[in-house]
Structure formats: structure tokens, C-alpha cells
Amino acid sequence: MIGRLRHICAEEKVAADDSHLQEVIAVSGGDMRKAVTTLQSAHQFLGANITNDAIREIAGMLPVGRTDSLWAAMRANVFANVETEVDELILDGHPAGLVLHSLHDHIVADAAIADGKKAVMCQAIAKAELALIQGALDRLQLLDVSAKVTRALVAV
Image (cartoon, rainbow, N blue to C red; front, side, top):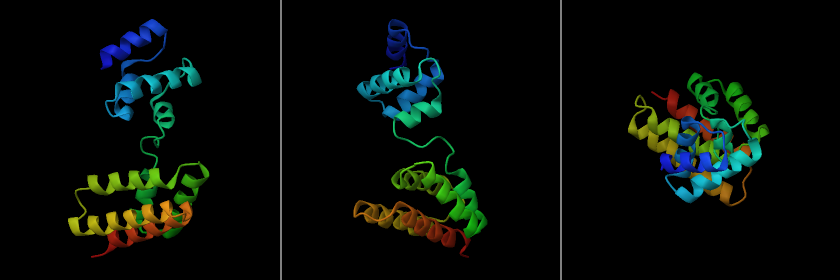
């Protein structure tokens, strides 16, 4: 797939290196049509200024590491910092669904969290996603999930 994307870049004079093409492949989930569309959008909007974060943004994803500070605030059990991080995510225009997905990835990847705690956290995320579908406010759902995740993280 990367070979085909390189060929397209050469033919269309798109300035994208292999790391950008790998990111395009990652965000497209291996779908060649989506990869070409993402690459085309990146080139059209950014020209020669293509970055991996910009590719993720065009694909409707959060920049890598964007929720790391929220995760750290939850781990530190300081709700004022959690609230600040949630507000920053909202003010930056990141949809709650994407933030919840990123938190889910943090939870699943953390080997130090017991499976029972992971289940509680993921259940809170699932309930928040349903509430969002039903019209709940992004900020309130993110604060609720963050509080529940924080509580589960610090529980003995």
C-alpha cells in the first residue's frame, strides 16, 4: 500500500515522506480509497506543510498524546486539574466521542490496572457514549467519566 501511495505522490507532486504515508495508512485503517482521499485532502489544505498531526486531524482523530495530560491528572487524583484538562479539550474543539475513545485506549493499554477496574471504567465510557448519542452535553459526560475513572484508579 505504501508503494502505491508513493507512486501517487510522485505523479501528483505531493510532498509527503514515508512517515506521513504510514500515518495516512494508519488513520485509513488499510482502506486504499480512504488513504488516497486523506492524502489528497492533506495536500490540498496543507501543501508542503503536511504533518502527522495534521493528517490525524483531517481524518477526524485526536493528535497523538492529546489526552496524556488528562490521563495524568486523573492518575494524580486532582479533580481541579482534571476539570481544566477537560475544558481545554472542549475549547480546542475535540468531540467528546474522540476523547472517550482515546481514554479507552489509555485504559486498555495500562497493564497496571486490574481487569475489574478496567471493566468499571469502560462501562462508564459506554454509558457516556449512549448519553452523548441521546443529546447529553460533551463537557458533563467527560467530567463524569473522568471522575469515575479517577475514582477507580485510586480505589484500593
